[in-house]
Length: 88
Image (tube, rainbow, N blue to C red; front, side, top):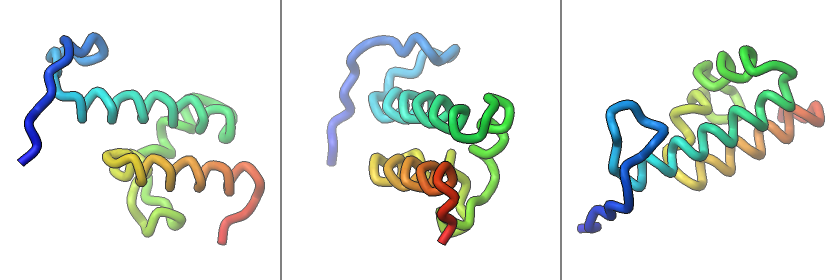
């Protein structure tokens, strides 16, 4: 079993989450929101897109996919495809 790693109080969470996994997830979310804002044109559209099922992610929402590093890469790839008009 993996031992939890406590580094410091997470400043981005109002509850003060100590989990490194949660902090990694939050960091990935912030990076994806920034990238999606550039691709989609607005932060509002990017935030809405994060929670809608995406065909390119096997009908999972981008937000739910960001739990893992490989999921993060899938979302980045999908945004690149959207940016270049490649949907297949």
